[in-house]
Each structure stands twice: as structure tokens, then as C-alpha cells.
Length: 569
Image (cartoon, rainbow, N blue to C red; front, top):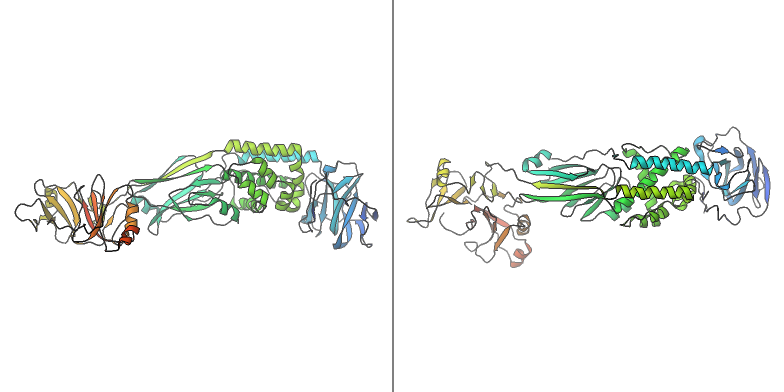
């Protein structure tokens, strides 16, 4: 066996059977009864007596090699002593472990590794006296058990098993659909998701429903809600978050916000690759070892082979947090191209297992340096990578196709405002109660005239010769008009306007040429052009985009955008 570590005892040494402490079996020993001897320098009062009434060790598959012996006086010693236990049969050194019970109950048994087994004796050095019992656990049986349990874990954990993660909740889901937001997926299905409107903005929440980590590539979306630090994996959080990607652990939830213009889409993708792959190799290995320890009677319960429960995952992540606290393990997992050898060496060495599992690592450490078991473990890791590499590639696309009521007089589209659109004619306007107001500046032969309706702030510029509508104007100065694309309104900044209409033709008229000595902007598409007045500001205000929209003038056919210019119609 390879590690000497005891939970509740003083951890004093990590060693291997090929390199025992120099003083483990040196010097002379004094017989203190019941097949136990102690090294020179031990307290004269030390005695050993059989304890047939004590609760026996309950580790699966073990047999006692000497019976439970009570070493007194109970408690810790001022200096370490070496104990030598006589064994009742000839055994292989690798088959021996030693049980120690500090508190005297059935649950109090722990394991330590002998520093040496030789000549019918097992040696261990300790600071503590209590109940001890050398045990045999045939090493070949140990290895076979490990291989069986590891294969069982591999067969189930690499299947299509999901975590029992809850569906996320988003406020305003109906509102999002009503406004024209949609979400579609392509590929496998590693996520739960919801799409809603909160605080006036669209948000999509995602949850990893696999039982392994998933990488989310989300360039263009903003991480508004990072996964909760539920599992204290601060190291994972530090390594996995950026403006472009997030590593979701099982059960983790993240919230992504975004801004879309009319008819625009945005996508994010998922994958099982790189960093997520390394994390799952660590998770898979620790889950398997917990199940193996449970098989030995020292694991605290099997991790489900079906859908993973969050209470079970908590147990795994507790071990992951400890493992990632080991420098060599963290360095191995952080490699973007997973290296099985580095992960096994950094995270599953005897010393690492003693750090992660405490005294239970005594059982595991021996296995991880044993040729057959260690190679089998490595092969399962390699196969895991081959089976899952590149898995769960999914594209999630969010679209925005605004659904605007024709009766809403406050929404400015590229083809009209509310009920008035650029496809109407003078006859259509008259049917709706609008009347010809003429042209205030050209009453004899105007090229265009204004149609208006009592009580309505919107008017229409109509080509006098053809009767077609050239523009829909905000003649009454309605301050509540907003654009369908981006929701630009009075008070929006020029920077917000530029961002909302990226991809459209933007003509910034900043030389007092928007009409009546003012500045403004005209945004054009194939359907029409929208005019915006801007408040007065410095050149720096305009350049930096700080200047604000003071007036939404309306929309016209290309070349006929409403401005502050006075043309009488």
C-alpha cells in the first residue's frame, strides 16, 4: 500500500512500499502483548490487550490478521513510535492494510498503510494509541473490484444520462413571443432554456442538463447572470468565464442578454470540448472512485448510474474542489487540449488521493500505482475522450420579427407609423377621415399637399399629381414615438441610434442642415427612411454619440424622409 493518512489522526507521512521510512523497522522492539511490539523509546507504560468486545472493522472483503488489539494508554503520544504487528499467516505485502479506531464505534474505523510488511510482521509508525487491527485485503481482489466498478461507471456515465436539473424560469415569456422574439435549436440537446422579457430587455437563461460540463460560446451576448457559486468551485469560475465563453457545470444556470434590430438573429453554440473535456475526466474519475470506495464499505453511498441528482453531484464537486486545490491537478485540467497522462498524474496520484479522500485514499492509492488497474483506468479515460470528444455541438438561434399592431400610432416602421403606411393613397386617407390641407407655402401648383385629421398628431405628405403617400410625419410633435428597430425615441443617444441601426444606411446631418438650423439623422432602408432631430451639442458630443434625439420626425419613401425643413406638406 502507498499512503499513510488518517482522518482524525495526525497525518505525518506519505510513502510507498518500495521506499519505506528508514527507521520503520530499524532498532529493537519490545513485546507489549497480544502480538504487538513497540520500538525503542516508547513509553514504558504501553500495553496491548485483545478487545473482543470492540466493534469490528466493516470494510468489505477484509479479514483480520491478528484481531482487534487495544493499545494503552489511549490518546496521542508526545513523539511517534513504531508498532510491529505479528500476522497470523504469510501474506503478500500489498495485501495488508491496518485499521485504527480512535473513538471506539463501528463508524470510527479508518485505514492506514503499513510502512513495511516483512517476515510475518506489519509495521506502522504513529502518534496515537487506541484500537488497532491489521487486515488482509487480497490485492488481486482489490484490483478486480476496481476494474469491475470502473467499467460499470464508464458504461453508465458515457450513456445519454442527464442530470435532474430544473427548467429555468424567465418572466415575460408570453411578452417575448408577442413582441416577435423566437428561439430555435439545431443539434443535440444538452440544455434547458427559457426566453423572456425582464426589465424591458430580452433575456435567455440556460441550464446544463447533462451530467458533465458544457462549453457555451456566446460572442455577441452579454453574461448578465453567472452561475451561482453553489459548489465552491472558484477555480473553475476563474478559468472559464469571458466575454465570449462560459463553462457550465451540471445544474449550473447562466443568463444571457442581447439586443436585436428588426429581422435580426443572434446565435450561441455549445460543445463538449477542451476545458469541459478535462473537467469531465476529473469528474468521471472522482465519481468512479466514490463508487469504488462505497463497494469497499468506505464511500458513503453510490453515485446514481441513472439521472444525476444534485445532492449526489454535491458530493462529487466537494472532491473536485479539493482536487483543483492541488497545484498539479489544476495545471493539468487547465490545459485546453486534454492530457490524460497529466490528469492522472496530477489529480489521481497517491498523494493527491490522500489529499482528496483522506484516510480512504489508502485503498485507492495502491490501485492507482498498480500496473493492471492503473492501465485500465487510463484506457477508460482515453475511451471516454474518444466517445464524447466533439459531442453536444448545438446552435441556439434567437430571432426578432416584431409583431406591431397596425393600430399602435406610436411605433415607427420603415414602411409607416401605426395605421398610416407608405403604400396608402389619397383616396385611402380620405376613407379614413383625413382631409387635404393643401400646401402652406405653395397654394397655386404644389408638388405635394398635407393630409390631416382632427385630434391626430400624424399627418401624411401626398404627391399632388399621383395621390401617393410620400411620408408620414409627426406633425403634432408626439414625444412618445419610438422605432420598431431598437426602440429609439426622444432621449435616446446618438450612440444608441447608431448601434440599433447598424447595417442600415445612416446619414448624419450635423452641419445645421437638417432644417431650420438644426442637426439630425436620416436612417434609410429599401422600404423607407426615418428622420430624427438631435439636440444641440458640441462636435465632441456628436462624435462620441452623447447627443440625444430631440424629435422623431416620421418616415418617408427613400429620399423623402421627414426633417425639419419646411416644404408645406
